[in-house]
Length: 203
Image (cartoon, rainbow, N blue to C red; front, side, top):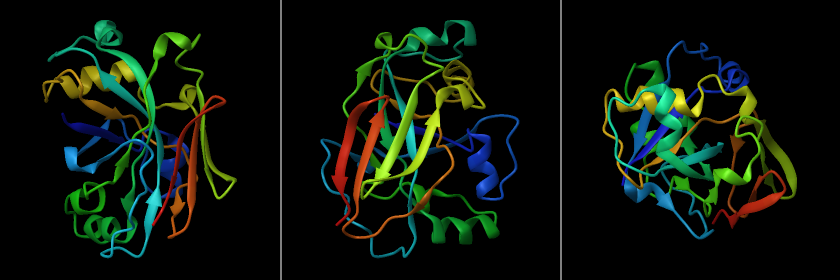
C-alpha cells in the first residue's frame, strides 16, 4: 500500500503559503509507516518545532490501473475518508529554499492519520462535499470539494501515467486554507459533512 498526496490543490491554500497555483497536479508520496488509524494519538516529533495540520479528503483505490483515462477514472475508487497530512513546516521551508525534496517534512512516521472510509455513493454530488477540522473545539479549516483545482478523476488519470495504482492505495487530494501549528495536548476533530470521522489528541 502506498500513500500518494496532492499538494496545492486548493487555490487559497497555495496563496496562504505564497506558492504559485499549479497548472498540473503537484505529487508527493508518504510511506506506509506514515499511516495512523483508529483515531490513535499523534505523537509530536522531536525534530520539528512547527508541525502543521492539513485536513484532506482521501480516496481509496479500488482496483489496479495504469494509464487510466480521465473519463473512466471514477471507476477506480468507491470510498472516501478524511485524512490529515501532518507537515513539518520548518523542515519543508528549509528544503524548499534549497530546491530539495519535501520527504523529511511530509513522510515521517504517523504523519498521515486516516479515518474510517465511507461509500462515495452516499453523497449526492462528490463535488459538493463539505469538510472541516476543529482544533480544541474551534474550526480551523473548512473546505468544499467544489473548490478543487484538479478533480479526483484528473488526479487518478494523471498519477496513473507515471505510477501504477493498486487496490488499497490511498490518495490525499489536497487541503483548503487555514493550516496551522499543532501543539501537544491539542484535540483534533474532523468532520465530513456532519459526520465526525476523526477525533484524536496530539501527545
